[in-house]
Length: 337
Image 1 (cartoon, rainbow, N blue to C red):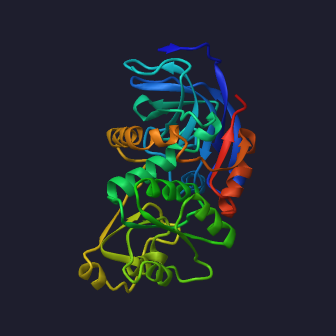
Image 2 (cartoon, one colour):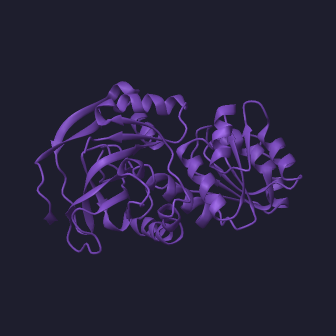
Image 3 (tube, rainbow, N blue to C red):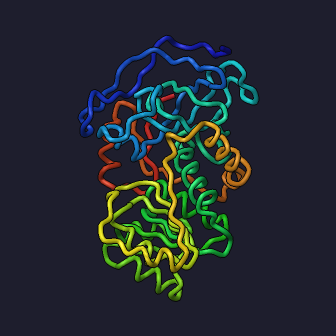
């Protein structure tokens, strides 16, 4: 392994069990070593995401063989190269999707899932890019097949996923609607480029989508709610519409659903989870991002939205904020590097 001068140990976050933020602890552990095709990243910042909260609660364990240290995305500097890695060098500034292990001073990543820090972004802000951009590009562009001129709806528009989806859908030439839970969050969505934002606490979003689209509905929906929104999502879709589900915050079982509209309107239901997908799938997403989206980030045409940063030792506070849903954009942990 080629590497910079490395310490033997590092700080990392660990869950002492399943439960609330009180199970979050910081410990000292050995610095990991990259295997063939992997790199070691000296982490400047790591993103905090809802799957991390689900892992802490005991309902979303890491895939077999992965470290139990949480964290799905990081940004920092390459500190070590595993065998066979080309195109990257010690000291390169990158952000990366990781299967776990991001809440630490050093993290191992697949070289194929590293992307260069976009020029206008600090390394801290870049840490909030991989999980949301991989998720949105994979599900909206690749699976949802969003095309120029179509109408797009994203739920949770003020979240990290939502903020990314709004901007990426506008980049691909769509008319964008978003739901959010307050007037402030709706304004935030519109500032990011949403053509309209719907306060779902005040308005039936399905009725409002029909009004905004002159009765037609939308072509693609990105949904992280699940069962409690399914009937209204079906109502909101135009003929040949596509519903893409990425989370189940509102449950996963639906009783008494009338499937007739699905058949009559030729609707497509799909979805995915990112973490367990094969490395080759994720590498293909990375290449799509490198070609289609990273030039827009480099050119400043898509911006990062960091709501708050916390030092690694305050990971509990970061999780409490995530669970409060009071944030607008990304929550990040920093290592002080």
